[in-house]
Length: 127
Image 1 (tube, rainbow, N blue to C red):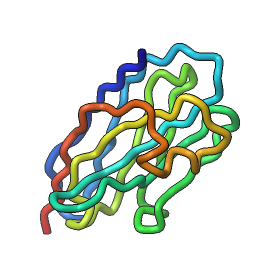
Image 2: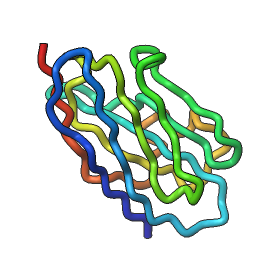
Image 3: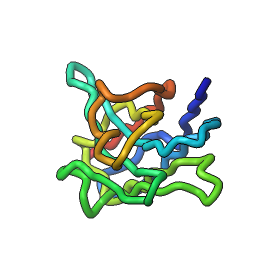
Image 4: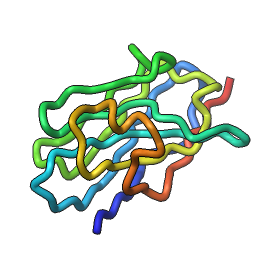
């Protein structure tokens, strides 16, 4: 059983920063990936950043490249998403996600590949 608990969401003005955290209880010897997804009202849930525990490679959606950074702590028990230069179009519910077996970060870019989801944390960016 994997449990994911997000925190760090909130309201910020355009240009501001937020850091999301995801506390993860994962007990496996498999190489897996973790990612962040977001879903705005009326929109599909989309992957925005992912990291592979087997080698640490990362993946980012083009719309967040250069602004968002995904990372893990050394124990791999907490996943982070540092979000800088936030825009109103970044407003969404943000979800932490895990794919139990993976070979790259890109595996966690697609929602259909995800095995476990967190409950989500709201990010609102005002102009």
